[in-house]
Length: 174
Image (tube, rainbow, N blue to C red; front, side):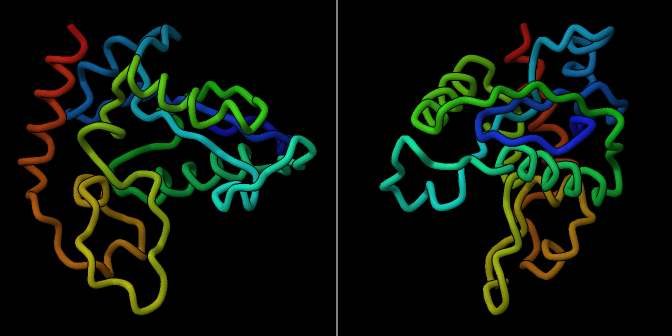
């Protein structure tokens, strides 16, 4: 999932799944043999401070895109029922003015299951004293991130989440 070495840039990316988790069988089918047709997740990586606004044209993107992909690799590796080698990535480094629009267009076009149905993959640790919220659905289906274990129990069972994912993929990949 990660490029072989760190690189400078900010931009957008799509993650593709080709593993054997039963909930994602339909997705694996369309992404097999290197035909990455439907991402499981689409995201963005903006330069440090970009969320505060006021970015000019001369903003150094730093390693924002590489760092974000690395964060995702850690999340996948921490999950007890996913394997990092089952994920593939495509990314595009672009000027930060285009990043939010491009991410929105990609999500609308491909409707990735982790963006639409199984929320929480891109979440970070909420921080000390802020664990009164519920565990994200992504962490309920893919347990293993230590910080998520400190949150309140998920509102759904694993079986319910797997069923929601299967139904969504069967209906959206037709």
